Length: 339
Image (cartoon, rainbow, N blue to C red; front, top):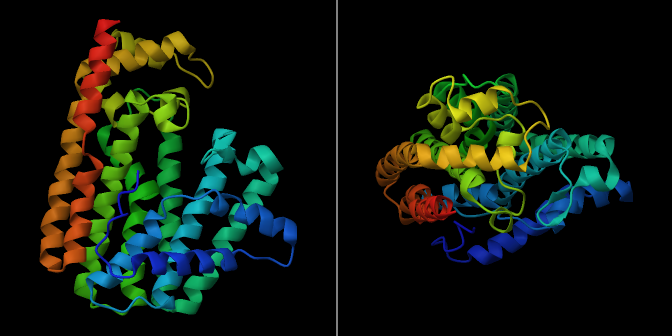
């Protein structure tokens, strides 16, 4: 999905071309082996959502898109890439973006060190952009870690709450989306008032982004997702649809019994099919969409206060993420009920 591909910024493709150059330059090392590992996922492509948010934030404040703005986008993209390197080690992933994952090709130690290298380069860029940017990035790294720990601490727990889930995704996903908008605003010296609004729009987009991802993990297919579906269930990460489904069952319900016995590697294909079916028929996916739409409404209101076509576009991004999601759920449910 390319939710930012039609952003109303004149010369946008040229800005993105320059950003790609800066991104590649930022991970070049005197050690060619490290450069190769650091470039691995950059060469594999990606949506570049976070740097695009940085560019959009500057544009929404009528600021010029200079190298400072583009470098702020590079910094947040490096943080995102580093998190992927580390995530793949934790998840023992073998592929990423239709390419071998770094850990599967070079091993866990190299993947972890390369991820740390990307974070170091991001920190260097932030420091050169000024103290406010450096502080913002440091605080965001802390929030990413806090969100990940919150998720790990509730792994395999069937009593995980909606509040615990939202706190985790606020840190591990939404914080970097928020920072992507804020860093572009800081790099272009926008007024604090508009910078804060842009930061909040980015945060709300991040919340919707993660909820949508967690819905698709239940209803998507391997071809659609680029990975096996229901991996969160396999790893004991019970996301919003699962939490809502469990709330509608007693402790003796099929899903509750199955997941209460879950451990790493314990669920087989039949177990996963049963779990996904129970979630599908519970109505929890629709309830998750409804909660996400609440964030969409907040984003639209804030974007309207920015009073700029790019700001309005950013406000529209959250609901666009949910375009067609109800139809996907309905089609999956109908297919399940017919089988």
